[in-house]
Image (tube, rainbow, N blue to C red; front, top):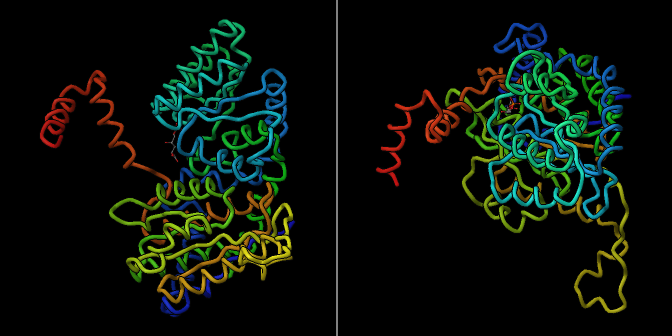
Length: 446
Ligand code: PA5
């Protein structure tokens, strides 16, 4: 299988200096070499680079576990946040018919602290038997830990303590963390997140694969897509034509010219959560040491009627990366009409994709003319294989780009600040002095 994804950067030509772009491509090739040789910052978390070569060996276990869970309840709640949530959420949203009835429903919890969200989830779960797949690499993250406690309590009322055990699967570290210990003590089936794979690069581990298999999708095709991209990017390793190198260099050349916000755009509503996954990947990887491109997203043509105004004429610090989906999965033609009074008679006989693509072409030209550089990523269609290719491409480009910016793309030290404050304000033992300081601040600032 070959890689079918393309990257076009002619839409940035008039905004960057071509010599600078070429020199950034050369630096990106060098950063890729450093990444592959494990010599860059955070190299202890680059195990995701080899995952495509290994994953087909775990897909049988994922399918078997998914089949067991599917046979024993019609719903599974996946509990996790950040990288332990967004990959599977993005894939399931991209592939699922929004108006259909899934054979097995995959729902999410622990990605928020909202009381309303979890209370209404429980109200729905009152009506059905369900499984819980709890995912946390550290095994100590507050949001999923709270949701898991609430759900276990709820499930126990249905099944009893012993009956609950086969309904729970834990995906966590092999040795450390509260979740690991709980899974061992309570005897839950467990899958491991490798030590050297960080959350946001973990979609090709059980973290992404088990929920995807539960939702009924072809995890082998997804893994093969990742493999095809990995192979193609290895072959194109040492040239600027490697699409991960090309994308990383292009966005960095724009960043250096003052384009500090990148908007990921697609014209398919099913890709809204793919953009959420991408934002986490790039935001958490690059945004540190007062540096980094701010990742944002919009969905067109919907948001052309809201954010489109700002993008066309607002402050000129934006650039776009458009995911151009080449072929739809379904066909729908605009019908003819005897009277034409609705004003769209000239579109009769065209498919909606033809119209959508013309909207995309028109928007690209308008935005470039309005001062917004555009990178275009061609995706053949929305299926498991293409999404596997796209996600691996984004991961590799992100790591290269983080090195180009000069940061460690595999840590997230800034995430700790809110946690410390939250723990102190909630009265966690050991945080007493901090609590006093924060409460004083709250009084002053309101
Ligand atoms: O990318 C990351 O490492 C983070 O976004 C984590 O995935 C997130 O904080 C959840 O962590 P954990 O899986 O340890 O609960």
